[in-house]
Image (cartoon, rainbow, N blue to C red):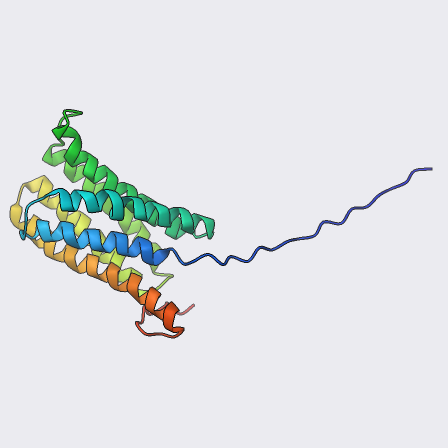
Length: 201
C-alpha cells in the first residue's frame, strides 16, 4: 500500500517597517552639490571641505541609501543613489589620485567625456521621474542640464560656461534638499507640509 503525504506551504509576508531612505540620499546629494557648485560659481577654492563632503555625505551616505532602497525593492532609488554616491567617490578620486602620484590628471577632453556620460545617464533617469513626482523631475532635469553644461565647459575650456553651470548647480542642489526635507516633514506631521506634487496615475 502506497501512502502519499501532502505538505502545504504557508506564504509568510514580512511587513517592511524600515524607514524611508530617500531623504538621506537626496540630502547627501543636494548639500554636496550646492557646496561644489558654490566653488564652480567662484565663491571659494576647491578644498578639503568639498572633498570630505564628496567622500562621506555625497558618497557613502548615498550608497547606504541606495542599498536600503534595494532592500525596499525600489530599482529606481537603488540605481540613482548608489550611482550618484559612486559618482562623488570617483570625482574625489579624479582630484586626489594625481596628487598622490597614482595616475595622470584627466585632461579637459577626458573630463568632458566623463561628465557627458553622467549627463546621458541622468537624462534617462529623468525620463523615469515622469512617472514619479514634480519635485524629482526638477532635481533630475536640472542635474541633466548641469552635467551637460560642465561637460561643455571642460570641452571648450570656457570658464564662463563653468561659472554658469555653478549657479545652475546651486539650484539643482537646493531642489534636492527641498525634496528630501519635504519627505521628512510630511512623514513627521502625517500630512502634506511641503508638497512634492506626485504625478497622477
